[in-house]
View 1 (cartoon, rainbow, N blue to C red):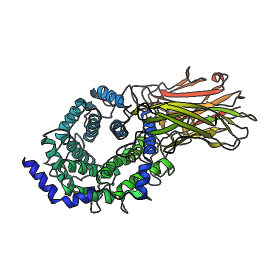
View 2 (view 1 turned 45 degrees about the vertical axis):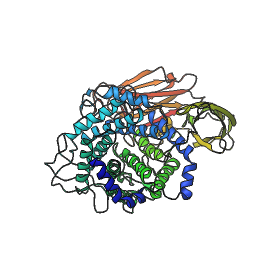
View 3 (view 1 turned 90 degrees about the vertical axis):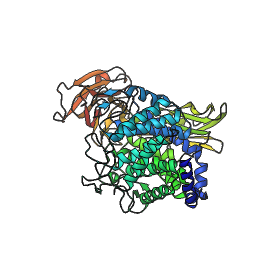
View 4 (view 1 turned 135 degrees about the vertical axis):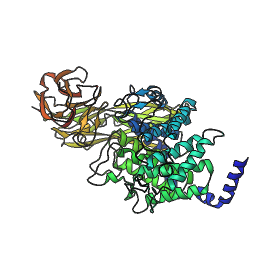
Length: 626
């Protein structure tokens, strides 16, 4: 009763402020457009989420080569499922929970040894997993997930240390650094636990203690921006304002506000949010921009996911306040990503503006997906319609003087009321002089709600005339059903008479037939560790009589070639355990004996020492034929 009276007094004293904070803003043109775009927002999020989950590795139950990033990517998929009603990926969440909750040596899933229950010396990594399992609990109500989050929080609690700087959670097990990310996570984690545990006082107390310490630590600078951490003398180090620190501070305050309804928390949250979008904040020309997105810089594997974390908690801000400035910001980020930062296969890149050079991988996918999720209405429409193409980025190396045929499949997905019939028209268009058969077709999908989208497909035969110039040429498929549902997808067909590209670039993508679990840390750096590999496909002209491929390659590689992508011949194996590129060289392999009647060559690179984490690395690829 005392706690209820206290909360009632706070609410009464702050009634006017709370009303202003939570009152819906006038819809206006942007609000109306956002409401009308609900089915499209769901469809865009779905194809982007499916693209992200194509990188999920089910045996290790993670996203390759990154531990905390995997937690955030899975939490993003949890956000997607919670926001849209789609429940297809609950099995992957549970697969990760069951397979990865044990003890693992350094280098298997993380650079650090994993201590069990998703904990390690990296305290912030442990907290990310705690939030992921709370998300899984929210989706399933299975208390094993909530229990794991409590176990993680109890572990982290041991690193709260008032003897240094008056409080705060240490960033690492060695207790060397107190920073914004670890403490923003701590507040959000403990407040989320409180809001899910009836009659809890323990975690509420930790959240309030953490918030009071964090907001008084000096890490929030005079402009309302969150610096990275504290020096050894307990003063702010003034280091880079990363978007995820700003977003976590916003998210921490919001979750604590839900626990207490203290209007002062919303005042601070709004100050943090307004600082982020103010001049000198985190926005360039209306687009959320990380410091490492600046020209001449590139984000490392950590920085690639920062903006998505910001948008996760900005979504919470927009949902909570209904402030048009915040909802319009969501709409602008989602539209910018979809229009400028997406390729034909619906991969989303690091630079949301689409500026070059851009990097595409599962981390950038998860990050940008958060903005698309935020654009989905809080109450999502049941009906939606989406489409993708397969292949989305095919390569054609045409024979001289003759046309070429390419098969493209248009995959159509829909959600709707149970046993509803959605009739959709698929209209295909191609460049002038090309033909697409059929150019128009109709499909019918019987929907089963929004938990499991239903799917069908249309096969297109694309005829490319002789003499088509090299470059990307788009075949577009528009899928419509009535006046409310529509979606457009495309296949970008690369016409090329030569193959000559750096790895880790957009030029590599059409040739990369199977990326498997390989990674690319920027230009001239694609590698496959452990039992992962990557495969390039070269569809040589039908009149080819000889062909070869040259790889600039180093470290511990196995090179295999094939004419069908299934039966492989090993042509090179590095037998020495090189780790520093000292064996880097251009190596050329004859593909002629392996081409077969299809005149297609496949080259697969893998790891000759799969247990030590230094697989084959390729810098540059070229292929020649006659």
